Image (spheres, rainbow, N blue to C red):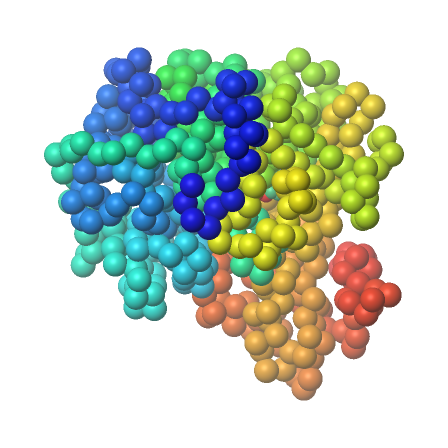
Length: 533
Ligand code: J2J
């Protein structure tokens, strides 16, 4: 395995292989098999463009040869920041064939996050669109390239304008050595428990298993049509079962550029979408939109909702409004997925996050001392299994805290298991704000806010919000004139932060409540802020 990754212990890996979970085939080879089985079926729909499996397969070969000709080799890291698009899929499979490693960056990321990802991954390349949602990514790339000398290659999906366009590098397919299926295929990002995101190495075998088992639970087949609504770099739309899961059964993945119901409902009607995955905030927006949007959504069979707590009242409206099933999903880029099942009773579907997708997933619910809680009590969720990581990339010190000695990942989520064995998310112990499914590290934002000359101390806490679930409240102790919200937002934006991380509220206080250990008591502070709005 790539240096800096923590492999599964050999006896565990053997067990997963013997049980048939891990099949030992790299993702690049799998696309070839899917293309052989479904050559003329539509694999991808992106705007006016449609790609058959044979076309996608050939495209990935030409791109792999092109990257190789540019000097990209096996295990080279490339930060990929593309909108939902056919290019993203073709490029990833090209890199899988080459053994080069995509590092997934959200389109919302700006210079600070991209710089961090490049440095952390040791990337030699960066792929951007020319423009997306009125933002000039080539400008961002120019800025990043200047600051990161190791970044030797920038490729642009669209007009290169000084950089190489992805279409320009395509070349006649060449013979390439296949990567080891047990090695890393790509890197996902952690949801911000630390000041800056950590890299999650996902292997070919673990990811293929996860997509296969979830496609099976969702009963996907060649006639299934998946609508990619969330950013494709996010684990949920990419592989739960998402784009890879649908390709594995010969179905079609349709790309939406935004979650806007005007765009998404049109695509559902025109393409006969059967399944999609969204976050509660989008579910809320779509429910409202059904009141005025008259598109025919009757092809929808299931809507998966996850990434943040789904309010029961919203959950109850999904099936009657869309005349399709609701599937609650509790997941994490680190691995473990829990789904409600189609044959669960209605109460289970609206009020729980279901059960783990693999029989080999191991779940522990523990108290602060690390001991299992009494049945039905809430505690921290610990997990390990055939598609859950054993360590973040190049992070030995953090890994020592984030994993138990026997390889369980400490999720930072507070959960309880009901009498019938279903998981319910109760809250979390990690210092994260879950803003409509976007995870924001409180520590990261506090660090940037205290860069303001008049801020002595800052504590960032979540406050409840009807639409987003949670919003970000910055509580500050100031010296002299305290900055107002617009000033703080401007400061953070100038420091290169993504927009979704900017605080929604700022409150000035004289002092913070403290815990017995003298640390800021964030629970009490959050409760005060929730009451103060
Ligand atoms: C409450 N909190 C939830 C839920 C995730 C599928 C679905 C989601 C993610 C994801 C994902 C939740 N209710 N139903 O990767 O493949 C919070 C938890 C969790 C964190 C993980 C997938 N579903 N969460 O959200 O890595 O706090 O992955 O630990 O972005 O989201 O965030 P992330």
